[in-house]
Image 1 (cartoon, rainbow, N blue to C red):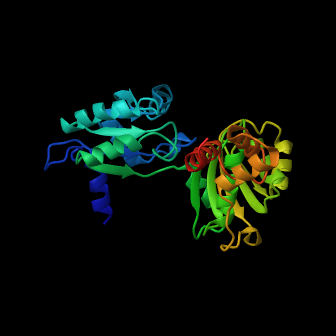
Image 2: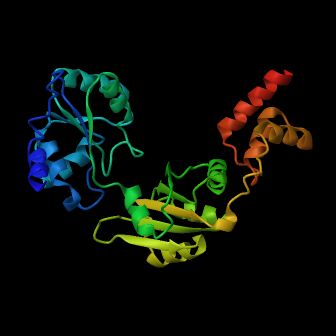
Image 3: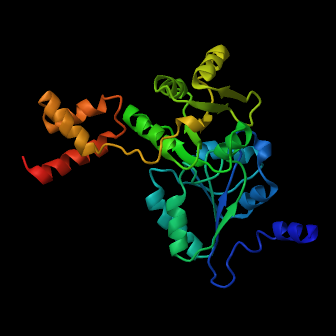
Length: 309
């Protein structure tokens, strides 16, 4: 068994082309999230052997590849050009070349570019092969100490308060109590303050600079975590992976229901003698609102279609 595993790993270059169709393969390669020693031997070998590396940021990827002593063709594949670049990569693979997708750190497509290329490759009949490794969300979950029998990943924490309230409501109504999020170091205190101001009954695990020399985790209630961040001092440095565990007695009864966006707008219009546009702004400022600006605008248009004016 050991021999077969080693044999398969050493033959990645041999099988970079699909022998039945003559097309290349698309490798989705996870890279370290901080410590370059976390790069798997298989991932390193594939990055050395493929014809093209599709990188989120070629400048940052060059640093990693330099540490790994890999010299290969880098082509940018970030969120602003991935639609157009997908056609280029597909064309290259249809000619027999192999492509590896990497992001700045961690597993591609987890709040990072890559999905458009994968979809296009699947539609073109090109094999898509995952090369597992680091993922900040999964690493944070694994060290949180929370219930991981089930969990949800929500990407980056919303910026608008209405969307944050809506997300908290989803957390309270879900079938799971554990959630993984990402947040910028410049907004991490806003995230903690939101849970404090909302009087959310939950526990947080904030993982900062995972796998790096000075990585830290902050655990406890939102108020306790805020004290820990303030004690640290320079908490606004380094990326954060956040895990939230909602208290059992904070979960909504499933029979409860949310007032529709249209109803909230009508109430605001009647109470304040407001136009639909003014009502949208008023509801957005309501602390009990869980609808986003776009949802409220859509509701206002729906009211206009229903009642005219």
